[in-house]
Length: 237
Image (cartoon, rainbow, N blue to C red; front, side, top):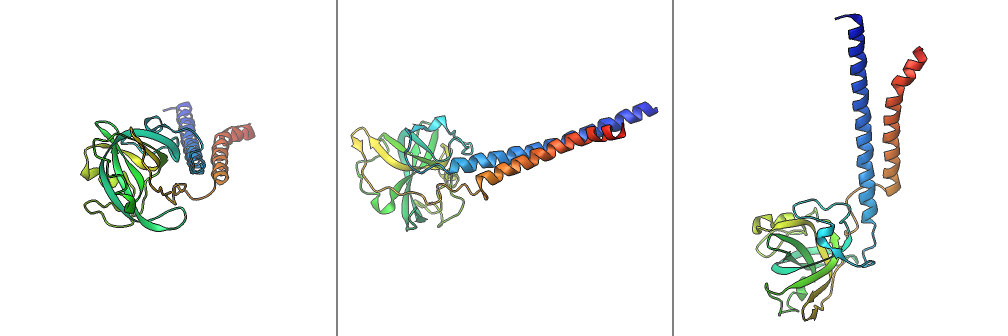
């Protein structure tokens, strides 16, 4: 192997190494950019400030809840096929109480967990049956990560569709709908609603602009890594 070949291989290996390091920095910047977007999305006011959109336009079953869906006002129609007590939950005012969650089957194969209200109000609408078509409007909220009780028949430890996987064959949406309205063909279902206190907390530390500054830093480092070989060549020349 002659000198020119050795030199070419050495330069080629250095170029590959530089590109790999730059790609790592670029990827870290994209990761921070994604975290900034999630954090910004989580800052949406928990109010019906816009017309609700169809659930399937911002989320899909068996997929993690993305930026587009977090804290979005959605609507979906289906049938309640199961109800659950969700104990020891804290609302936006700090009050701790037991809540009612329900599994809404939205088509023959898919379902989503719905936070309906207080467990003590579960008997307020005795006319509701599995055959009753219900349109739900509410905030699409990330699932809870921490247990507030124990799973038992009719009881779930947290608002998270993953705890229902063993009890249903439905393809479940990630997260849950914090219902603000429920309507049947006969009219609205009147009951007190609750607001989940952590609905605007995506468990991402830091601030929006802080993550954007990290994006700048990582991409600046990528630019420096790409520029250094060129600078060294100029210096040697």
